[in-house]
Image 1: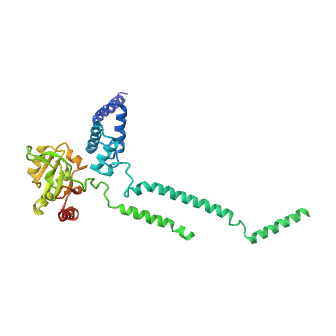
Image 2: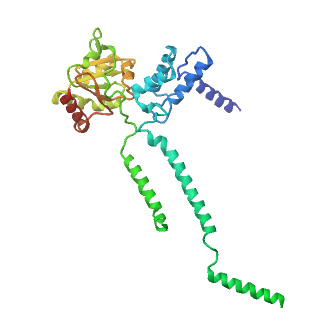
Image 3: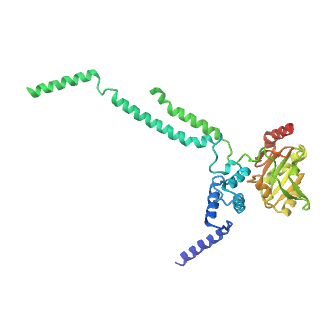
Length: 159
Length: 178
């Protein structure tokens, strides 16, 4: 029991020491804080490439968060803030890049894949339908044989 | 028609192969600078060697220069230092240093021990100019033309090979057009 308590206390304490890694920013309103959280969630860290700057602890992400906060205090709009960071670090820092010739495939590939899939499905359906209607199940020869057999059976029943 | 569909998996495999092959050897951590084609951002920072001197963007006017971002905390900067010395001495390249997020004392000791390849070193302890330049990891080396416009940014260590294959052609181009 004592061990468990020690262990839990250690975990709690480690949480405290993590707490001061991220700088704490003060906001006038909850909506401003939400705006800040949304902004740093959609900006990408150029150093640690698959993290947004909200998650990353790298120094550059810290600088970027700080810049976002300062610009918000100066009354910049979301677009101005994002554009200012893109102007320094490039389109790379946007998790949702603008549509242009370079990012065209990035945006178009999912649509192309879905269209391709639909075409394949449509092709399969059309083919099976066509096979069902046009190609007769029996050849003329087989049909003749069946007719003969049925005729024979009718005769037997009657007789 | 049926024959054609038999070859479909092969065609798909070839297309995917070509796309994936094109990605081999590309380093996703090396990003193009957003500043290429734009002038060096305005700044006003101290000279590392002479704190009373203020340096600004006019430092890059007049000739083609390399702007090398370094810090004593950066092991790769230690790696490339000898090559920067070689460039400054043997190739007569003008190199401006940007001492990034560092302490002046450490930086001066470093230059004293290892030699000073820089014509001037901009002292940027808070990384403000570094941030405006989009520096995300030292060492980074910018090629700046005679009118102070950024031509190229190299992320990572500068060595003989990088010089021959990447920086020298950009510099020659900048000199011709400048």
